[in-house]
Length: 397
Image (cartoon, rainbow, N blue to C red; front, side, top):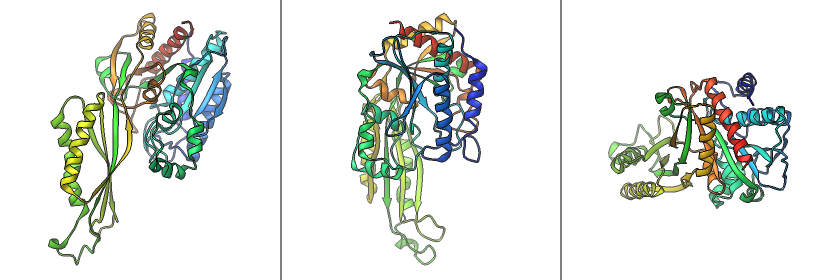
């Protein structure tokens, strides 16, 4: 049973045309471009024999009945939204690869025992104009999102309500397994010339919004001794994130990803600075150590408000699913290795409630979240083949 490699390549290239103008691919949720791209994916799902629906937060779900339709479903998925000026493979390989798996099974007249589903999760990249945090659609579906006043205020910006969040929840018992195919977004497989990565676990993360307050005033008439410059006050925190991570060591990483200086004009002393701070590690306790040190630093700086925007525990992939992925690799003579994931994926959220697996394929030079992101189409075919065979193995358990 072979996938149609040329069809999959054409579908990936066609979906890449749904992009905002500019460098690379920009397909952010809650835009006309995203909606058109999602409609294209929906048509692909229906052409593959899937019955489709959108849930209350925008997750696109396609379903193929099984021989025993009252059983829980084997779900395959990922996302099609991108970061600004991103690439054409991040997320989309998993969605379009999953559709190709279903189409191959259908064309081969394969009778699946369990219902099969493909899900394109909404707002994985947190690219909508609201601070919802990444893997939004999958977190809502699995009921692992913290529905607080901060989140509710933000989802109003994308016309969602608390009822919408509650309605999108899905009983994990309706899912037998979750599988996701994804580019590595790092360079381990590429450097070691290994065809398939079998992911053992996905790092957790905490993300914060720190607001450092000063006093805006005229840049020309305010003497240096009388200034309360918020940007200068923020500098120890910006540098401190890097210092904290290096001090703790291990595999911890920390990033200041955005700095918003207000009012942000050249002739006014900065009165307020917003910065986003993120820590990631497979051990959540290590993240907590970093957060404590960050809070101690903020107390020394003063005049700083800190809001936790996002907190996601790390997740381990299911041992049995990993074994089935390995069997699929061996049967196809693909080189493979077990490895952790430093990037977050929808599989992290599903794995908290459902036995899950994540399949990696190489990223050329480890580049992702950039316009020159590239994965060889032969590697995409290999990954989709492993995905197909793993589905069959799980379907016959």
